[in-house]
Image 1 (cartoon, each protein chain N blue to C red):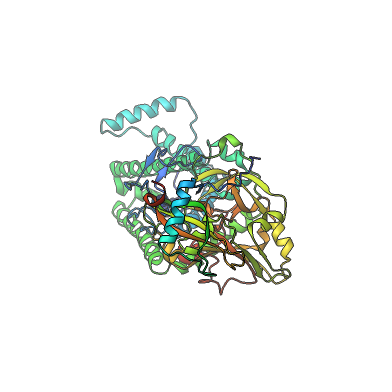
Image 2: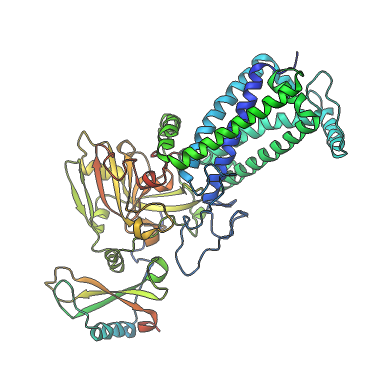
Length: 495
Length: 88
């Protein structure tokens, strides 16, 4: 078997550089919005094992996780400057490309027999690999394996990156999808829980960074022109041309990064539209069908549940709150046969309360386990009888981000739109109780949505109005929710 | 399922002394019901605003007042007080 550098392998290599660097930068962007890592699912403040922020949060005032966000420079984050919506779009679009590329790589690797270049045929390779490390440490170059293009440590390292690290990153990434967690909670526990999966995903990212640094150093020490000739022409020839072309390819990849950054900064809505169309294929095709099957034990309930979004500062809200929301009313209307106006007692009387102990997934990456009690959303939908043309549910909040959330981009009344088809999925809940007590003010009192296959921002809090609509183009900026309008998140929250 | 409590965790019951201070302060400040003009209120629970609401001073509280006029169309209102005014 000739272990050479066929054209497909060379093309895959350079495309891998592109996708991997896009993943790394967008990954740092996602990390920046909650720059703390935990091993426990409750992400309790002060329990992080790693933090990438110097911010100190107040103790005398309610702060939320928007206040904790960091502003990373575009040199390391795509696009940088606290643009989580853009970072998520790039990360998910790049991972789709990376998985497709990796799949073709695996298929061709095994179809052409090139997998032999990575397969350790003898235990002695580990001894040889150790000797290679010692040789490199002495600033010498070790011998290549007989008849092979790599030395022993290179062979083992590439095998580990291709067959262990890359799948590991995909698996730990998938373990962070709310829809996958909700449907397969045991899968998440395989990694030690949701936050352990996030921490491992980060360590995997670091491993890739270390690999890239050493890989580049190896290419440099072995001879940049000679090795890039292998990865451009397939053989050692025209070293000067290879050097020039390799720098040209790297410049093209850098240009793609610069273009992606500028596009995201200047026209985030078009990035959202274009990349969102690509991402919605697996979101709706694979993840939408998953139902939540969570039932965490009581012992796993988080003692503290972080907050994203601050309570309404309007005087009418505070007066309602001090009277335990006796004067609160929920208006349910729009395209329905039976519009309703309910007070809290009336809402509670509609049906037997349903309780669920579930993992909350904030879009920023933190989680916690809570017990929520309330009215199944499907029950309310059945009672109001949506008209045939109703396709979406709009949850309107008493929170006005013009005054209530200085850390958020944009202002106006908070709202979120949910596809009506989701209403009857299991564990879709209008919650008025949390952990056995009336829903706390900071968590959305008196009523909030629980949609367990979605990321947290879809679960509107401080709800006082529910409208059934046929289209959401005329609501807000027409993107399907306040966060979608202002932070450019995708409308579907399954990942 | 965990037992469900009715008491809202953010609300504090006031002692008779604290309630009395609130009533006095309502009178001193000339407080009246915006809905019916009544001046007789039942004092309810207190909500600590200072921690929860970003626009409030650290020592701000809201105390529930309910207009005793049986025909009042909107009897529930409140008065904003500082800690030292009624709880110290």
